[in-house]
Image (cartoon, rainbow, N blue to C red; front, side, top):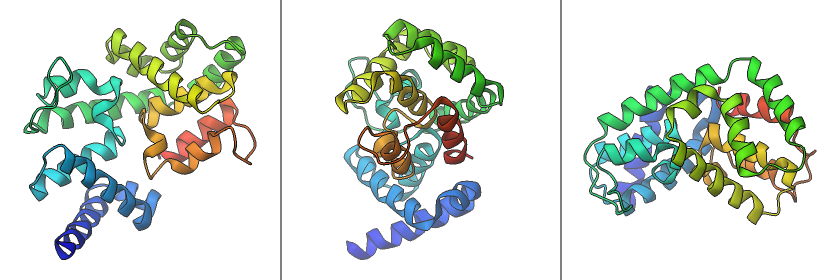
Length: 229
């Protein structure tokens, strides 16, 4: 079993290096190996057995972030692909094509939303929000900052994303005025980016106990650009 797992890990690393060369160049072998191992365990719990399906699941994780199936932003396409019942019950995974189409579309929308102008927009919105980022204010801010992605997600799912991400930020006792920064990072990197091996350094920097300088709108934009180039 250990040999089989080791063989899969090497094959998965080769798949990432060949299929996502920029990703490999940015993150390197050690981080990618951590991602491969975490994704493999998640896929096994979902009932995935074939190596080909494991690699496809890994590819979707590269695009959509760790735990993408539970990210409210991707809930609608995950259901359409037949992976989840309306009540949230997990189905046997069989359709990858539909989710790859969504992943490519999400990448296109992300690129449109990451032009230079949102940096100043984010800075202005954070100043406007001050220390009271309630749900409606955050919703309006995200629609202003990231119009393409927020328009592509059903409003109830976007509100669920805000509630879930805001609750997680509050559970860490994150300063209230920085909640919008955490939500912004989650929108670009995935709602569970703190558990994603690729983005744990950024999550650690955002943590209230971090020794790093407190994040600002401008620094967060720079970090997000570096993390997803």
